[in-house]
Length: 319
Image 1 (cartoon, rainbow, N blue to C red):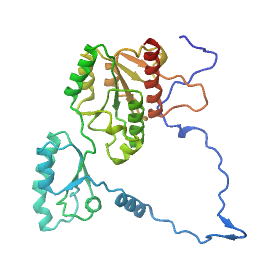
Image 2 (image 1 turned 90 degrees about the vertical axis):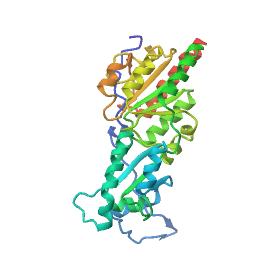
Image 3 (image 1 turned 120 degrees about the horizontal axis):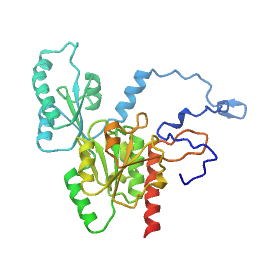
Image 4 (image 1 turned 180 degrees about the horizontal axis):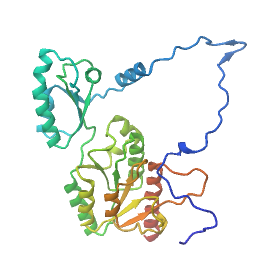
């Protein structure tokens, strides 16, 4: 290895830094005006269930369609749908009208699964809040906030770039579910000049208003491809001549030793589990980020930024 080995380097960088030693915080004191406190009355703690309900109502997305027929029409029209919520009926007492919708809802569920749309069963109270007490008939769908790019269309564009002598870089995320991390990765990717993002349709953060805000608007600028099989998408891009570089602490190779000047797909994994074994085995290069401090890790968005701008540094030096 071409680096100073006098000080041990810590290899993990996916776990959150919350594992670090806790720091003592100064004692909180109420605000005072002169000798009088502004408000010394004890605050009644809000129950967790009530607080969650209020937050959900406040953050209810505007891009929601509900009702069996509107959702079915949206699927058949090819509308990009993030997720469909179905009422949880097991063990619940249903009225005659509600029972009449169960068969149609089950047929819609099968249609959604065939279209590879994420589904989730939720209590009726959540559907009421999500639709602001609309006539949802036990079904509500969240429409995507952006237009996704088909993986085959992206592959054609990448192939044309490579044929013209360009060296595109793509970021693929394997089970990155945290919205803020996802948005931060998108922001770093756009700033570093990445061509596109790739994410699996399941086990990924939703592309919603919060994600767009976390990305500082980058998700409206950089193409995003949502795929049914991340493994299949990477295999397709490898067939174009792109190398897949996995960011993992399980490698003895440093990211600074990897050649990132070639057409590259940078693969980032979930913070808790990292990159899945089948995706890791598919990658051409596995590399990690050396850490020299006392905190044991970078989170996945910070690690992505380091790798993307290392690629930019290498390309700048070669140009």
